[in-house]
Length: 245
Image (tube, rainbow, N blue to C red; front, side):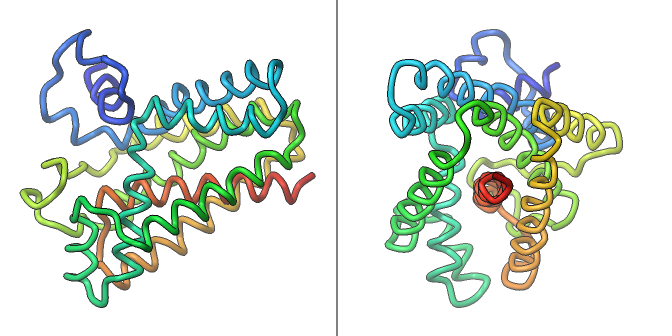
């Protein structure tokens, strides 16, 4: 329970810290509970879309649903995506990429990357059928987080622990945590019509492509890479859903 609370504290801005104080060691396991946190973040986005779509036109409902998750997470993953674009866009070598990603200022690659990302996401979501969109929002969040969480098992951490932004290096998942993470990612998929299940392949392909790039250029991953990998995996899920229509 402490590990799950630590994950909710880390991945959302809700005041779970008021419930109890968890040991710092629990924050090493937050990625193992990432897909379970997706039930909350993806659920809020899906519920927001369903409610707003009854009041407003579809494009407005999509924007408000995206904003709801941004508010809930504090743009945690978007910050990682911007740093990822800045680092890999402007860095010439491993040290340069790590230095740029650690810089708190956003550069031109980060700004342009976020603009293009959200234009792409918006246009994909407004193209989806209204009735199935809430289920795609929920399952896309949880499945992409499960796939992305495996980065800690696939690659080593690229920095020294004392150099990490959060001061914490994630612990690789044991078998029980892998099974739990998989269940958290898979169960929401059962809400989708079977014709949409093949879209699960898209985040897997993105995972291996991005991880290969990180292995070649960084020989590891960072927290920013985790956030970027999740968002890129999720948008590939939405892309596959649009292709399935």
